Amino acid sequence: MGVTAALHCAEAGREVVLLEADRVVEGVTGKTTAKVTAQHGLIYADLLENHGRDAAQKYAEANSAAIEEVARRVEERDIDCDFQRLPAYTYAADADQRRAVEREASVAEGLGLPASYVEDPPFPGGSPGAVKFDEQAQFHPRKYLLDLVEAIPDEEAESDVFEQTKVTGIEDASGGSGGTAGSRDESLCRVETERGTVTAENVLVATHFPIEDPSFYFARQFPKRSYVLAVRLAEEPPEGMFYRDAEPYFSVRPHPTDDGTLTLVGGQNHKTGQGGSTEARYRRLVEQARDHFDVESVEYRWSTQDFVSADDVPFVGKLGPKTESVYVGTGFGGWGMTNGTAAGRMLAEFAQGKSPRWADAFDPQRIDPGAAGTDLVTENVNVGKEFTKDWAKTLLGGVDPDVAPGEGEVIRRDGKPLAVSRDDEGDIHVTSAVCTHMGCLVHWNDGEQSWDCPCHGSRFSIDGEVLDGPAVEDLPGRR
Figure 1 (cartoon, rainbow, N blue to C red):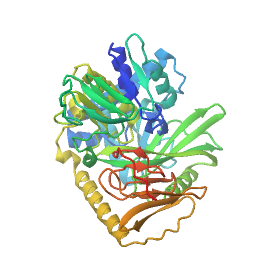
Figure 2 (figure 1 turned 60 degrees about the vertical axis):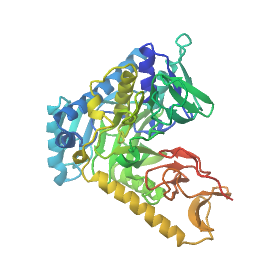
Figure 3 (figure 1 turned 120 degrees about the vertical axis):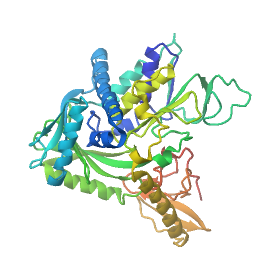
Figure 4 (figure 1 turned 90 degrees about the horizontal axis):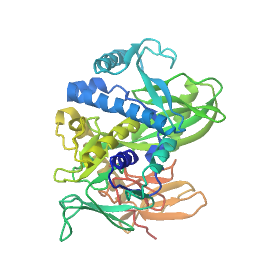
């Protein structure tokens, strides 16, 4: 999203500065399964029912346009990124879901999408049916976006990309976003970084979860972790991209390599910090893969995280109700290749003073409790339960940790909760166990050796450094 937005602005002749806290395209985008598709599970029937036809139409158009933008850029720039057109299928988990799949196909086709219902999809065997979208795509997102990054710097236009430049705060041109304007030039926004201050007419916040939160995004979307295996099969993978929109979620697509085709198998989604053992999740995903395929080997594995809005539509637009020149994109629900591309285009149009044609469907300030349904209440009740349960458990718990290598435990010392872990070399690491976002207690992630917050999805390294927001401050170290 950030790279796409920056490039759109640069192509429009605007002076652009792209700020990246670490290295570009090494976060969530580099860990996706990279399906470039407007088929996002069984979403369109829900959008039609909960948001109305106009919003469903705009969601469909935005994501379809994103596919074609990616295809156009790949062709124009001759990007070697394994771009390939393939059909996408969401298949029925069982006979009971067949009717939902049939309805999805009908609604999607009515919205102008290349959708149809198929009774016998090529995967999995024995499926009671699937909704098929023709002319979707897949690609290698890092190869694609790294090529786009190279097009942003322009000495004459004074545009550039600054990596390892962490943003610590944002002030709107009106002083209402991240602080007060004071005596500064109120016609410009200020972006504070660890290396200095950047002033700009507009700021586009493309940080996965916004680092400033005047619209309570933490309570309107929830974090989801999922897992991916790259496996080598003793057979050809099925032709197409496949998704099961039911617990346990399951995703399959081929991935070409120089020494043959791997198959990306994904699933085991759960709310961050609440999924139990990550290692167990990986084992179950391997079992699922072997249930469907003759797996010769598991070549790679990784996990990723995204935020799902309570009403299933991302937030793209003004960061807060009182901001004037700061815009945000977040809440892509695991479908960031198209939602993120569409958001990047819309953010760039906002920065040019335009009104994007799909803007009202994605408006962050929308208020529609009916569309969010029970999810909004359920997720926030869940947060309260996790907060209370973990604090009670810790205050009544032990003080003497016996932590094995690769493990972590929250203990109590002098009445304060500490996150104690031991790395694979046997060294002990101790930080505060209190998430710096809103005070929940973190849980140990045994697969990534990280501390994950079960309330709003913040993640921290073994030494307490922020890996994922909404937290922006590290866990303080302890002795």
